[in-house]
Length: 582
Image 1 (cartoon, rainbow, N blue to C red):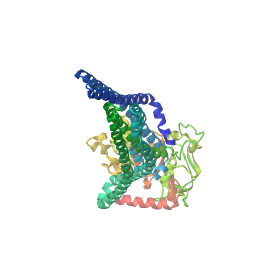
Image 2 (cartoon, rainbow, N blue to C red):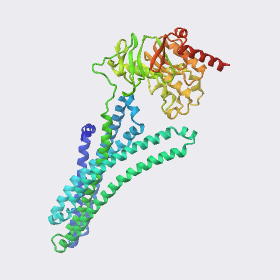
Image 3 (cartoon, helix red, strand yellow):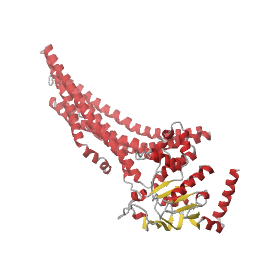
Image 4 (cartoon, rainbow, N blue to C red):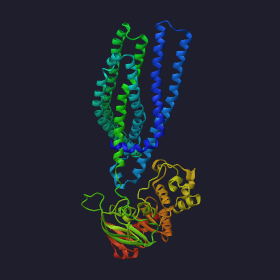
């Protein structure tokens, strides 16, 4: 199985633990095989009336000592083997998360969050079980099974052959059932991902559901996907439900043969009563290896299905990565330029989102981007840090194509505030600093003051330690936007990109934020996207987007003189702001 390569390095890294664990497991198996031999001798001595209390005590002491050693070695193998499976679980989860972070933005447009969550939880848990208990059950099935059969053969070859009559049926049944299990596990895990996504969406949107009185309809949607999940599980249960009873039937069939033929041989004195009891004990020990074959099949098929799903993600390569020969880049000295850039989110788009975009921005200049909704403003700023790559043309920084700059170096040059502010469920301080311990309180206060948020934070009982909840639920839209702005301003990158930074605040607060942006503009290259034209009127250059093209370009005064979209919109917004002020 090709996907086994995912967990092979972990086996190599933990090989010492695995070896100790398997040795301890084998020791447990042989100690278990030792106990029926003691029982055999005790029964034979009792039958022959050749035993006293002292000898019985010795036999009992042997059994107790064996049980004590079994407990010690069982602890060791559980610590080593199950511990290794947990480390593999941890490593796979970390590996998966690290890899997912390298994937391009377009991947997350196609992949559901619930599906990714299912991979990180259910699938990895299945792999952990297959590796941990699967390894234990397989070792027992091989070592304990072979050793037990050896001891049974030592007692009586003919009786052993009778006892093993059901064994071929077990092998054939296992082979027939394993393929069905694998396919149905894939179905179950696929629907589990859908169930996770549907549930996540409903919990995330619970306020909208309640506001629109959609509780019954959304409950019905959850019920529908739950029924589908149960249906897939029931199909799987039908296979497992037939498989395990079949294993038990074959085991009890063996016991029936032993009682019938072994009892006859005991009567004929071919074997002793102690041998028969020891044989039945060995058959009891053999029950677990026979069952383990079925359990291993169950675990391995479940783990294999999960491993294939995880492997599929890990084999997905980022669409945007360092190009061959990509250069290191420490600082910007000249500026940014768009050279005949065209872009579509999907290859089959007839009308591109951006078409033949050309402009340049010198070092420490400010660019304003305005235009009606859907004109391509946010797309332009998303292309600069290579969240997406251009389809045609190029974006250059210091006359170097951004695709020829190492991605980490490119991103270190840019601090980017997206249009939709996203907050984590921690404190305000954690959201602004991104848990960076190097940021001191003075820097934190400076950033929130620049974002016009300081007085708001002071009004909270816990100040910077206020927990904002999932996606910043306790904050208003404007407060969330200002937290996101403070997070952006606290980072001293040479290129500052702000996508509609004042869309959710009042005019007075917006004016204060605009003043802040002006104050930092002289020391950074700033790009501002805004629907409020007052935010960009002092920019060194303003471009007006319409239907993916640059319709107007120039300074504020030049665009006013053109008397087109920019001039008309600016005058309307001035009137609106004057009316709001009165």
